[in-house]
Image (cartoon, rainbow, N blue to C red):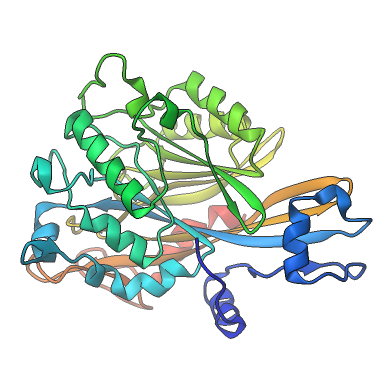
Length: 378
């Protein structure tokens, strides 16, 4: 989780990406310090008539899909350096209070042999690089989760434990799978879930359904009901949809509606490898924000929008007093990025600068931002 940064920088970032303030606020009747307010966040019934508001931002990026050509480019002697690939967007990734990524290629390390498409296994160093760049949690349920079988999952999760990287969607055992992922971010409890449509036909070993979460309606409803009782906000990562299609499928829309009606506040989609729009889903209990696809963030895919991704930043506000509390998803913002390379070398994720036009895509920052946010702003 991020540390506080100077207020001058906060103001600049808030103007640039629409991030909410990360400091404590109070109404005119309140007179406590930020430290005292933080303590009161855990004891809302003791506020004596005062109303408090806390605002945080959650950032999310798309697929981390390490093709052979990408880890070959990262090789430095006997190790791999992915940090240089993320250096241009490191400041961006650290700006939200909490940032998540979709680690699509299994990161089980060299022990099982590194590999790219169609059965991925990435160096452990990609996990180090993501953590260094500001990623606070990785979503792991995807169609490549079982590319190296159960042993691959166990090796990947053991490394996350070693470096202290929270994860969701793949699990070591029944106990791990039964431990709900709820992160307290400045007094706001955010619950995380992660599911995939399948694992490329590779079956889960008998009796070990805990290894990977599938998009099963009954399980989704059950999980949402359970975590909803403990969290202020619930965010679901969904690995779904059709590859390379820039519009969500009917199945994506059906699942999004199911999740929204059963307690999901935010849905972040992955798998199409291209951007798909953001919108609000209205239902009896309010509104749910769904990002149908965040595309590729770091990968070896090029052209036809497959080398364009970005970070969505979502503002969340919690108010509370002696009568209780209410947490609301306020608004999203979006910063597009693209994967730069030269002859399958020098891979770097870069912010999509104004009026950048490259390849056959003929697009720019404004067009991409409008594409993602137009429906969410209606």
